[in-house]
Image 1 (tube, rainbow, N blue to C red):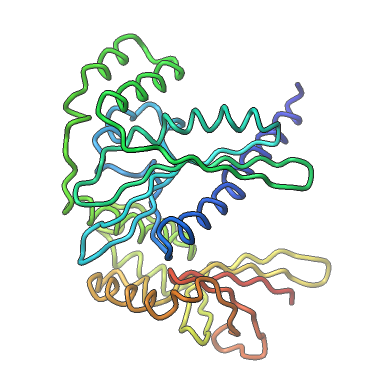
Image 2 (cartoon, one colour):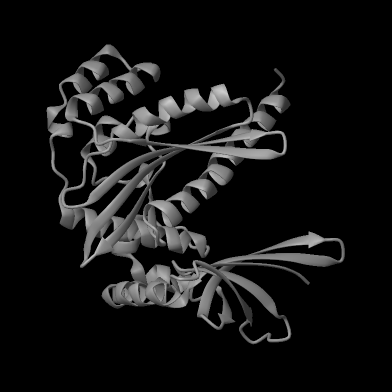
Length: 311
């Protein structure tokens, strides 16, 4: 296989799992499982889960993909662990991928006081059609979770010492997560996601230690005014002959205020309650100070927006 062919295949796999598959997962979680817009955290970034943070430290590719979650009365109330698979080969390949994904979603520790579900999504491109499959895994016991992690480690080629450590890792599997720590961390991780979507890549350390510096960067972003308020945006301009294709991804301005975190959380709850019935809505908008450049803006109930225009 040539290097170019391998690059094309890798790009196609990435497109299927990281875009189509995640789009299907988002629709499934928000419309059928939770029935409402939810927040999402990249599983690679979590430290609150002792198994994901410690026992799976060297198995990055074999972690589940995402945690969708919701909160009630300041505590995490619903958690959906999601692993997304994708291919363009066959339904048989999808079945094998789903089986692998089952092992991955078994690993995370249960969240005390929260309803937790574990879902594997498989997306398969066949001709011009995209087939999607979903498998839900029942609540596992400690032994099942340990066996799943051992299998992942063995497939990764881990050393016998690592496998032995996992086999004896009762301190990982039996540790109960602190709801207080969990709530703080997922809120910060979700805030990092929103900042990145608006064009300000941020770490947990940056959010907690240097909020003023991040807010200074936010203040430099382009502002789009809409009927749903102002959005701070990252703008990408792509030359198309004599014209320019402008792609804007942004977040409601009020959600990016790191200097008043409590108020931001309350504003997000009000925003979602107001717009939840229309999860995705098109509204008119324009760049601040340039009303002569009208835009069609797609907004979501979690405060994000997307706009594509040709000028």
